[in-house]
Every structure is written in structure tokens, then in C-alpha cells.
Length: 146
Image (cartoon, rainbow, N blue to C red; front, side):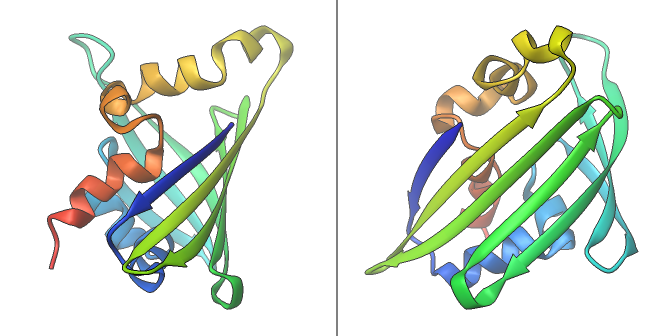
């Protein structure tokens, strides 16, 4: 899944929020906590509210960032079944940043029908408002910073 976002922030500012897990956790809509486990490795705590009963879980995350080309790769393994890789490339466009977000899902065949935009939208209910991007979801918090 490829998504493109254009926001009025500098690439440096966006890069900082994607790579600094404390900042990332503060603005992400479903992450409640992030613990650093080692260099570039974290344990993420999420709580989803698909109905009246909240569903909480944790998963490991690895982050690779390259400031030289403004790229960030986040790898996630949810419930030992679903592997998600999110690649972000940030490009300056005058006073804006264009964020190219490439998301790949890998899971057992039975889960394949749940993965993709439908799963994404069910997981992040406000995604309709933001055209489908996790970056756009948590950037709402960034817009209110400064």
C-alpha cells in the first residue's frame, strides 16, 4: 500500500517525530507507551477500542533511519503473526514536506483477507478523516505542537 502526504512542516521536524519514540508515542492515537529494549528496538503498548471493550497488546518494533536521505523504516511483528513494514521517505517541497509511505503486510494465508486498507481502517477508525495514513493520524498531534 502506497500513501502520500503533504504537510506544512520541515522534513527535519517530521523525521524527528517518526524516529523519536517518546515523541511518536505522545502523538499516536492508539499507542499508550513505548519502552526502549536496545538500540533501535522498542516494545510498543497499544490499546484499541473496537467497541465497548478495550483490547490491549504489545509488540516489538525495530526502527532504521537514514538522515542522509530522510528515510525511516519501521518493522513491526504483531501477535507473532502479522509482520508490518512501513517505509517513509521525506521530501522537501518549498514550505512543505511530502511523505511517501509504503506499507507491506505479511501474514499467514488465513489472515491475508484482513490485512490491507480494510484492516488498517478498522484498526484506526479516524483514518477516513485522514485519507488512510498512520503518519497523517499522528501528525494531527504534531500540528498542535510548537
